[in-house]
Image 1 (cartoon, helix red, strand yellow):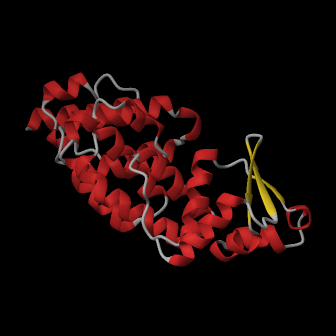
Image 2: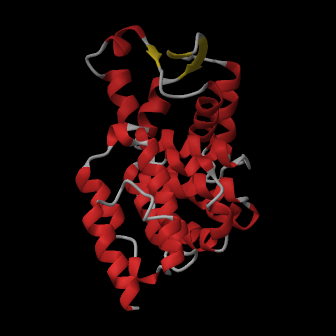
Image 3: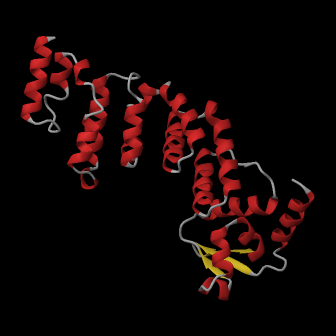
Length: 248
């Protein structure tokens, strides 16, 4: 930490000359408008715009947990470019908060930290990073975590949290698992996801998912285990596939 960072940290620790306060879950955190506004255009509008927050100096945040906000505040006051935390879940929360409030320095630092943690991540952590990097369009992180996940393909099949992915993230995961697991397993994952997310899906999305499956790679036995029993395929499609397997 440089001398300026030490000075700013000392100021916030002593709460000297603070002119704003952030209220999160009934907890109050003091700060300086100038520091927050320099770090984020969003906070600049809050602190100095024609809003109630700018007049009262009180900013209520409902989209962040206290622990994440403290990490955020410590980062922008320290002037450091590295994230000290090693907890993947907390780093992701900080990355999401920094992304939302347009703080590129925090976003870059979190991405670097996660990239350096990939070799020590378990499959649950890898999936969390995969989802975050896809949703936030962190392309470099997404490419790297994807390569690690492919090595854990057999474990991914048993992870229930993938069914909570946004539809486009789950679709990307199914694409990335092509060739890493059997087509029957990919089909089963799609079917379970669609059954658990019926309220948010429509016919065109179902078709998009089914188009990802190479049915010609199924054996007749696997076909009867999965697609033959599935409600995702109509009778006509099933009949056409049975004829295909009969020819093969």
